[in-house]
Image 1 (cartoon, helix red, strand yellow):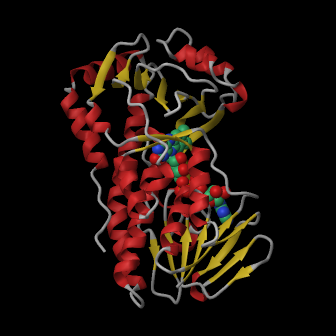
Image 2 (image 1 turned 90 degrees about the vertical axis):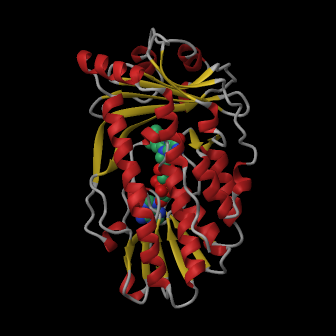
Image 3 (image 1 turned 30 degrees about the horizontal axis):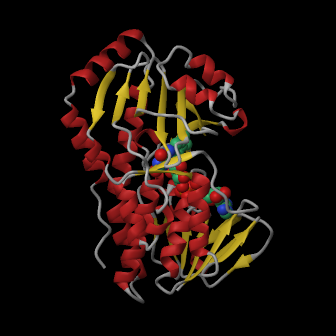
Length: 379
Ligand SMILES: Cc1cc2nc3c(=O)[nH]c(=O)nc-3n(C[C@H](O)[C@H](O)[C@H](O)COP(=O)(O)OP(=O)(O)OC[C@H]3O[C@@H](n4cnc5c(N)ncnc54)[C@H](O)[C@@H]3O)c2cc1C
């Protein structure tokens, strides 16, 4: 089977690696001049770990056994706990540097897939199994085109009426500290229209993110973060002091404007399928976007293995049935958590904090375990 994977993000590389292991002839097309992970850190939960393992990629996070801090959960800016996770609910979770993960995923496909960088896909013609790149190159005779081209996917529009992208109303800064910082407790701190999260890496450096409600007009760099989070509990100030200002990324948080009616295009000589953010770009409030991309890749590979030659359309329909309900439910939950987390009116924040304090930790833990309860389809 000849496959073109559009995009070499986490979704594209995981899918490409999995498909090459089935014997498919895979070409990965990446618009950027090189394949590189952007951003800072990434939380990979037990479901993402299982997806990587089922793709034969468990080794890409071998070095990422995070030193589990004794406590994790949600706090107020003065450091009081609103809710705590039991360490067993987060067992198996890994925190990685995105650059390390990307480099390892690239090693997994290097030499087994044809990787073309520096020219993006301009359009695709599934009816003819054709992919046209911006530099005029045509790639033909495709049996399957995988749209792994992220939030502003071009492949999406070839499958469904594209609902486009919606701004969440808040923006985030994120970075990894340049030096190790002692973190006694991890998780998120929630204030008025602002949140700060931290997760230690295995080498003691700490991945942190800060989000504030705004129309996306914040400034890159660390100065605005210092100002917005001044007076919040430690080690927030220490983390900012330990961060190189040049390493801080800033971005407005966006998501797919509406759930898609399908993730697949069938019925022609060449199938089409969306994976990762191209299919279900979600806000990062559950830390599941990339985990779901890994599940997508693992599921697609499993259903293709199961279907065998000639069963492509059935396999794609099975993929759609397995992936759409779960990813769209998680995207909805993430969106709702973001709206509540970013509340800024005093009475609403008071009511939210009270509700969180009154919610038994057992409920939070059950939700966290449910989120991670996923197994790859049996082949
Ligand atoms: C602040 C923040 C924190 C997050 N934290 C977490 C977390 O802790 N855990 C988690 O699981 N998720 C997290 N996420 C979500 C996660 O980053 C994304 O869901 C994930 O990276 C999506 O991967 P992807 O491969 O689908 O898309 P992308 O990473 O966007 O990759 C798409 C690739 O396609 C390429 N491309 C685009 N258009 C074309 C084209 N026309 N032709 C060729 N190539 C093209 C792009 O250059 C890019 O390389 C977070 C997101 C944010 C914003």
